[in-house]
Image (cartoon, rainbow, N blue to C red):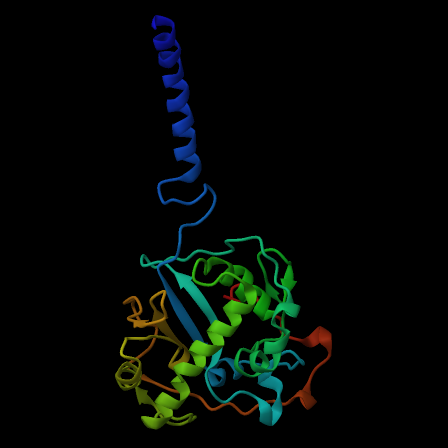
Length: 265
C-alpha cells in the first residue's frame, strides 16, 4: 500500500506539469496557441464604384471600372469579414489555398457583383499574389468557421446575403441616386438603411464621397448594429456617378496602376 501511495505521489508533479503544458498550448481563449479565437459577428463590406473608379488612371482587363457600358453602377461586394466585438479581426486562419475551380459555377455572378476595381494582383495569405477573390477567401473566409467551412460556401453565402439586402435599391428608393453635383445628408443615408435593414450600418468615406457601406450580422445572419466608431464622413456626402474609361483606352501592361496590399483589405 505504501509503495502504491509513493508511486501515486510521484505521478502528481508529472500530471500537473502535463496539465500546465496543455493549458499553455490551448490558451485562455480556447484556441491552439498561434491560432485565433472564434469570431463574434460578420461584416458585409460593399464598395461604391463611382468613388473608387474615379481614381482609375489606366485600364486593364481585370478592372471592372474599365468595362465601358458594362462597368458596375451599383454597390459591389468587397468581402464578408468575420470580426471581433473589440474592433479587431482574425485573419489567415487556416492554410487553405484558394482554388478557382471550387467556385467555377459562380464566376459569372462574381464577375458582376464581386469584381476587382483595381488592376493589380492582391496579396494572399498562402498563395503569393493572386485574384481579389483569393485574397478575400484566404484572409477572411478561412476565419468564418464554424459558420462557413469551405470556399464555395463562403462565396455563395456572401452572394445570397448581398442579394437579400440590396443597398443600392434601398438608397435609390429613398432618393439617394448617383450624382456628380448633389450632396446628401449622411444621416438620411444611414436612416434609409436602418429603416429597411433594421440595424445601423457603418459608412466609410473618401473625403466627401461614400466609398463603402458595411452591414453587420450575427452568426445566424440576422442584422445587428455595426460597432460605433468615429466616422470618416462629413455631414453631407456624395454618391459619385462614374463614367468608365472603357477597355479601348487600355494602356500597356507596364503602365497599369497596381493595387497595393493596403488597398486589398
